[in-house]
Length: 362
Image 1 (tube, rainbow, N blue to C red):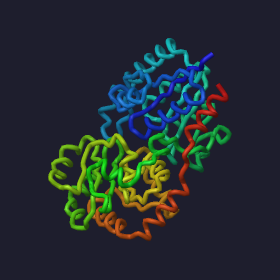
Image 2 (cartoon, rainbow, N blue to C red):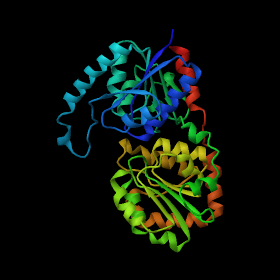
Image 3 (cartoon, helix red, strand yellow):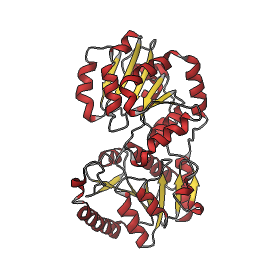
Image 4 (cartoon, helix red, strand yellow):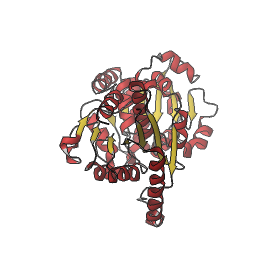
């Protein structure tokens, strides 16, 4: 009889892409498995999951707003409503197991599954576990983690160190540098810098690039600039008429961007780090300082301490980011050192391991 699995979570590409990678690996190993995603209405997963060929149900839920306490007034009602929605989903889908990948929507789904004795699995992509995952971890069947030292958050006997699942388009990419650069309409003879602020954009990175945009042309450099939606209009206006700058709010085919890039500017969310390890790119991280428990700084420091990446604080990006990336683009020796060290940290088959372990116990 075919198994039925719910995958819950989302909010950012860092949660959605690994979730889809796990779903694909499960389908590859047991094609008859039925998979249903559960996400938060209005969030990125509601668009990205159907694009990947899976069905998704949305919950009316929001996370705790750290910056404006007034916005949390309706939170208990939303939580109650989401539990009722989860109950309904479970009644019709009857899952054999639930996988949580992080993001608000994973909490009510896994909590409900645990109350019904259904097997639950967690994938914690960061080196600093999120609060809801720590709570859910106590009753989880297996907790898959991407970095060592996670026993300070989870029961040690439930942890399996597997790394982060990477989108197949990236882990198995064979796009050449020239193909990548031509994809963006740029010149293969010039050094190319890729800036990715995460799927939702990065204000400090965008403002730093904007402020020093002319420096790229002065140094004979090209820039592929993913702005995120909030900065897209301003970024496009600034890049207008500059043949060495490509600007858009989102890059759908990241394999071309990674292939084109000689050096990269990036936030240090878990998935960005994982993909850069797999692609072996010299990278300068600007950690997002308001991520839960400042986990992006922890992620970046982990690589910085292994001479596998450079790092600049968010509040120093305005003046230091562009000069630092220009220096790196000219320092071949440093690029080679970073490439070699970041490549040693790459894991390419986490999705297969996770799928295998889950199918073994359900």
